[in-house]
Image 1 (cartoon, rainbow, N blue to C red):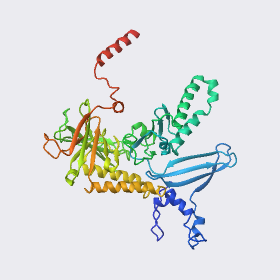
Image 2 (tube, rainbow, N blue to C red; image 1 turned 30 degrees about the vertical axis):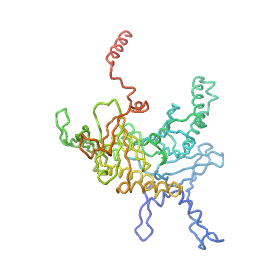
Image 3 (cartoon, rainbow, N blue to C red; image 1 turned 90 degrees about the vertical axis):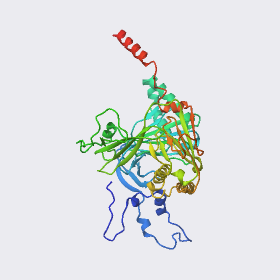
Image 4 (cartoon, rainbow, N blue to C red; image 1 turned 45 degrees about the horizontal axis):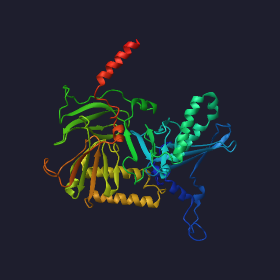
Length: 485
């Protein structure tokens, strides 16, 4: 669809928002406010009769090869972005179909959403699945490859998958009994999940194009809803039809020839911009944080499209215990404390009803004020700005809760509200600056070590890591290979 152009000849300016209004606004065009018996506030609105909210196109039915009707609705989803909802129906044979397509472009990074379902209300979460997304129900050991786009909820998504699996089961019973038995087991587990008898279980939506989404809830705790952005692999870029338009390498800044990285020395090396796929430069610098450890700061800037990103990487051996840091923020001086939040760290502020899952913001080396400001800006852009002031389809109660949440967050950033920052890092790679001498105890901060849970060990891949006795395993494998030859 071509991008809308602005009219400068005296006519009204046409913007993307005019095309992609929220569903509430589009419904308002069809249902004008009433006042009295005439139902139109005493004003005759001729535009309502001519205005078409849903576009209709005559198209070929792939079932009976007669002409049917395709209806398209251009709208904006709250918390997300603009989409095109399409529905086809044929009055000749009764065949119908529907799908959803992203109206925007491919995002600079891929996105992965993980939802942990623990109660029946979680089935009501909205799910946007683009035609490039992969869906996984992890406990069901089931993966749905990229295909038709869908706008549904978790219950509808799981129900459609189970219904599709049930098709052809009778034929499989005769032709492939083993396959029939395995699919029957999956169907049985899926029905148990839908009935609420198999909680908890997890839903993963992974979209290299970054155009899929699972709706969050402000009451979600840490580990309930997670979003991770990632750099696409060359294979994923190729599948999306993306490639570097100029493969010529960049003359990166000269780096040292020694193997060791020199602290405070800026290194530059060529990279590929995830936004426009043109060559760009990534700068790297190792910084030694006093009384903590050395970290690596990385920054990527693309001069072609303006894409920018920065990240913090921590190194060193994996400690035996995780670390939990609790800071009581009581003054403007506390807001200026340096803070390092690693990629594996979870952030929580109970007084602000704020929980940030590990990996959501990546690694950040900033101040307490800077960290809260980034959380506020990212959340506000997802909830209000991406869909035109939050979309009229937002319930008034939910809109009020989000407004109160951002009001408290702004008050905390301005230093008008006391709160607590809790950093929980299973890799002990996060840090908060003390307001006293390093060898003294800060009365406003507590640091405690804790034993990692089995779930944290599994997420970090530590259960599959073997650090002792692997030499003997290698010898045994070599011996077994020799005997087989």
